[in-house]
Image (spheres, rainbow, N blue to C red):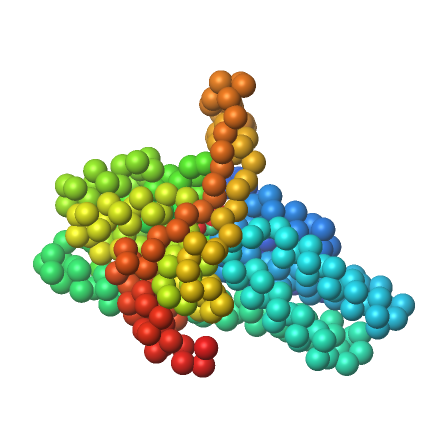
Length: 368
Ligand code: MRU
């Protein structure tokens, strides 16, 4: 996607420096655009844990590049020491964030590729190729989600005689979360680019405000009309016929179609069901957990309470953090919630759209 007319991805290997990977440090958006160099596994793990990068597909791609950096920096004193370093790096990266399955998915792929390669140089080159491939595959899956999701939006505008389609989305499931295109935003960008009028209601998404800060910024960069709303506004808008479709992303979806996504998603699904608004989840297949039947088995990350107690923003040209709550009040910070399959009207994947059910998911992915 483009920033000020220049194409970017959310992560890429630094040109002319094979020992460095670059990311957009998302903590500073939308006020500052800062590119960060990652050279070590520690830096990569910190970037994931502290949310310089976030979003399930991007966390997976970043972990893959982290293993590439491990392959580059591992001691070459013996094959055993080299392998132990890679394994420790994978364990460290896996422990950074528990909910998004893409992290473990990418790490397993990387470990298999490295163990199958011969000498040290071969392992480094295989790791680099594989990390780039994972990143390219995630971008392509999101592009295809856009192709399939476009049909849904085109169908709605036809029923509205060409009037703008109002999409509500939660968190940031845009290209910043996904290498490129985004999951929930891919159909929106595809529709906008096809000349279909779309308008997006952007949930601010407390506590880290990924909607207000990231989704709003990237939609604006692409020229998509949008309005930021407080997290509690969605139900009201749905009651008044102001939302045509809800599209969200997911951090992990079971093979039965239960969806874990950013905290607050469940409440949007309930409001959508009560008001007959279609509720869709967009996801690449790397986000499907083929080992879990019941969504309540998905680990839900709890983050530090200060993310709730403080809020960050721009003041007099500087980014500041301010205390919202009484100084002594503790805060709980559940980062994700579960939306049961029965509340989901459809899943938009790179292979097409299906009902949120085991039968239909396996129909799209028979090899699983
Ligand atoms: O905690 P985050 O920002 O890493 O959360 C991930 C997300 O961006 C959302 O939950 C998103 O809707 C799913 S990932 C495309």
